[in-house]
Amino acid sequence: MTYAYPNFLIGLREGLEASLVVGILVAYLVRTGNRRKLPWVWAGIGLALVLSLSFGALLTFTSRSLTFEAQEAFGGVLSIIAVGFVTWMVFWMRRASRQLKGELQGQLAAALDAGAFALALVAFLAVGREGLETALFLWTNTQAAGTSSGTGPIIGAILGLLVAVVLGWLIYRGALKLNLAVFFRWTGALLILIAAGVLSYGVHDLQEAGILPGLNSLAFDVSSAVPPSSWYGTLLKGIFNFSPATTWLELVAWVGYLVPVMVLYFRPYRPAAPATPNPRAESHSPASA
Image (tube, rainbow, N blue to C red):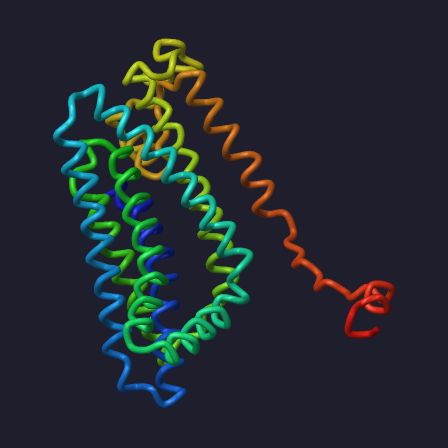
């Protein structure tokens, strides 16, 4: 079950984000006396979940129908895309979490004026974005774990999502107080660490496909000290995607991603100061003339 831990974390964090979004949407409609319009919100959420599951199934069936080289190229490219999406999501959540509630409520207020279909669309887009990102990253991380992982990654993802739903419901009901800033900050750092391993795996896939060079140019090979079949080898592979035989290009990708991204992530965040009007510009504006 070692391989379940990364996907559990991914499912927990992404699922809690989606649960909080749903809670904000539902609470706003209830508070504004629009409870009768909740079925439209649930319809949009349901469609978003169907889209996310279909996307994951499409990735799985597509990869199985390809040749070995095409599978490696497909997995490598998607791994790099997934790392890009997750990195963007982690930084976006760090920056936008303070305004997320207000933005969603503003969208809902506009949707209420536009009609029921607009409500479903807001819910679909808000949850669908989270769902597609989650499906892509879970799929690439499961591929990185390899066939030896069995059902561990799938079980981990399901457990993480279930725990996230329960936590989201408890927060919505006011039964649980969770420091979300601390939670998202440290789970974001762990996701960056996992993403570095997925990126390294993606580079290795592209080397296997013959797209990138250096497949036989190893930076180190500690297979004798860390056998892949050992418990600690399995632990390192399952959590960090560590490969005992790592090429130079994989190592460069791992370090070149992890170090600068971590530095930027933990750099103190300074919100942009609101623009101050220019007195001189105002004195020459048409309104003041």
